[in-house]
Length: 271
Image (cartoon, rainbow, N blue to C red):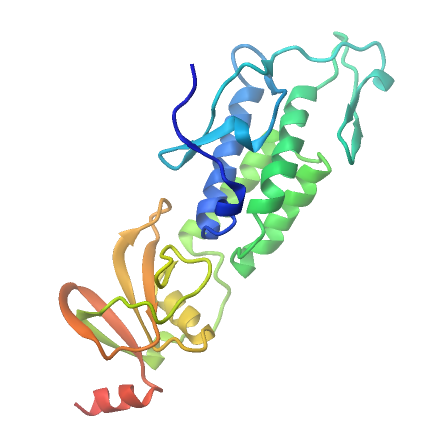
């Protein structure tokens, strides 16, 4: 019996927004936490490859458990407990019951690091979160973290991201925008950014309109943005960034923000 879902395509995942890639890594960490503390004992995934996983409703799941094992390597001394990978080896302890301590958990965790974390975690992450993500990569890559510490580190990043506490103190930029309630801009294909939730434009996850103003200011051609009603899995709204504001249409639920510095914005103020 196999779990039905979408196969993992790593190249495609690298083109998705960071928030979605973080969700995949968090799902994997939660899965490995369960395997480390399962009622059957610590379970190792012996064939740990991206092809063994599928996406189901946005969550990562194992497609089959044929290559799972609860057996931990037997030992008589510490020298019997070396965890070998193609590029690294890790010395482990031999427990009093003659088993290599935590070998299944550490095997899963390092495989998660080399197949998932290194590719999906750092790229296009919010700058203020990058030091924490770098700590996670270093600690799992050296196996200084176990799965418990790794899960806590991921949950800390998630809390900072959802709450907006990761945003560094910066000048307030929203005052440089005019807000028009009851209107939105027509979605076009002129202004694009990467990675975006829409391939046809620039649709990004934001914490607030203030953060959206900072993003728009950082983009060379951005002149306006609208905070949409759509939300990501973290509850953050999506904002659509535009290179113009000329095509406005009524929308009672929307607010469009337009740069005051644009000449069109100056005309708008005088109206």
